[in-house]
Image: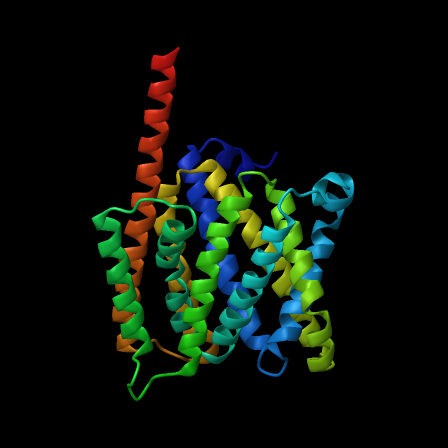
Amino acid sequence: MSKLAQAFNKLPDNSKGALILLVAAAGFSSMALLIKLAGLRLHVVQIIFVRQMIMTLIMLPKISKSFPQSIKSTRPGLHLLRISIALVAMLSGFTAVINMPLADATAIGFAKSFFVTIFAIIILRETVGPRRWIATILGFSGVIIMLQPGGDSFSIYGIYAAVGAVAAGLVMVIIRLLSRTEAPATILIYQAVGVGLVLAIPAYLFWQSPTVNEWLLMLLIGITGYWSQMANIYAYKFGEASLLAPLEYTRLIYATTLGIVVFSTYPATETIIGSVIVVIASAYTIHREATLKRIAQRNTAARQKTEQ
């Protein structure tokens, strides 16, 4: 074992989770940059299709090792719904990334936290208190500031980013439902393979022969996307969600830096103001949700102890 690995193992779990999450955030931001570069000439459908195929190939050993258990599901209809909505999230989100400054697309994408709250009320019948409602309303005001509807700098691609956030929020709630009965690997496999199959014909219709550099970009998009997702999962496996959640917003720092270095694009004043509001509101929403979850778990444990 290397000295670096030994030093990592000696760290507290929350510190381990924080370091891994910072790496995951850098990975997601790098993937967004790669998507933007590939999208300079290639169609977004082609990029997503190749990405899903690469992710499927990476997961193939895991699928075959536990086949057919790895694809057994008691809720195939819910998987199909998740695939459909994930497709909307990817098409909208990737289109926004390709056509907007990285910082803008990333900041609007954080609005998914507010939609998770709304869909959790509608679908999961969760109860939301006044503080989370205030945070949600405040967050939406930040998104409106960034979108600037009716303003001179309004862009249709901002709407794409918002639609991607809505769909991503709904996907998160569906994953909560699926995780009650399905293994994480099964959920990931259905999404990766399902989206790829749905896009097979559209990708053929929009296909343009990639250059060597474009093939390399798409290969890196698939690899970076997979390992960033895995790093994100492991980060929360080590650390507490309420402590780690604010670190998710380092993606905005990474995206802004990459946008300046690679494309010489600086975030507008409205983007800075709106993103600060969104980050504060969504960080509070996630923190409050984690706090309430811990309280519920403690109450359940105390009730079980009393019953014994």
